[in-house]
Length: 115
Length: 112
Image (cartoon, rainbow over all chains, first blue to last red; front, side):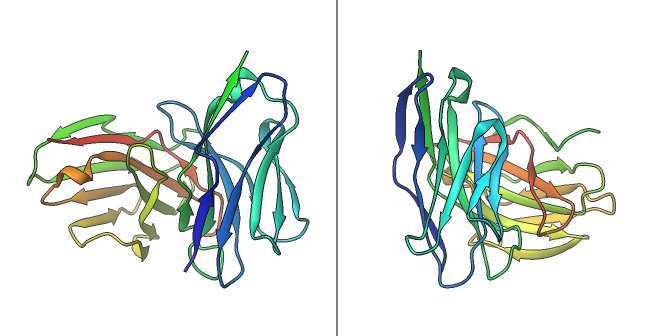
């Protein structure tokens, strides 16, 4: 079975500081990994995804994530956050052995950027 | 090009009633997935439709059912509503099952 654990429910950070949102997964097969962002009263927007290849993945809005197979992690990072990055962030994996598009989401991490 | 749209935006129902939620997929997308997001939780996969056929289902009871139409829009139907069905229901469309999913804004369902 596959599952996703987001290790922090809330991450407060000051504007222009770096941030890391942590995500661990458990899976007995190959995984496809995603980070989504959800702004208040909106749907989810894809930040980045790892399907194969380079373990360092760059996404939109200056975010990047690194796939670490040995630690079963896919942590999201940004070197300098803005107030506008305040939102809910979800890590997700696909259900099944291939990228079927059937996503299993973590519980979410609320990023609070303070001025 | 319009994105994924969902209707209605909000809905209030009482226990035991039935509800239909609608989703219009992005132009050219033949796959629609539905998710339930309870307050403070991550979305949970309900089911996926690909070219009008169900293409996988999550751990939801049969009273959750769906349809996909020839224009690839979709409906989610929930019978015999329970209080725990109160949630944000999200649909996402994609060019194919393995492609990037684009989410709509969701329908907020409240069951009293």
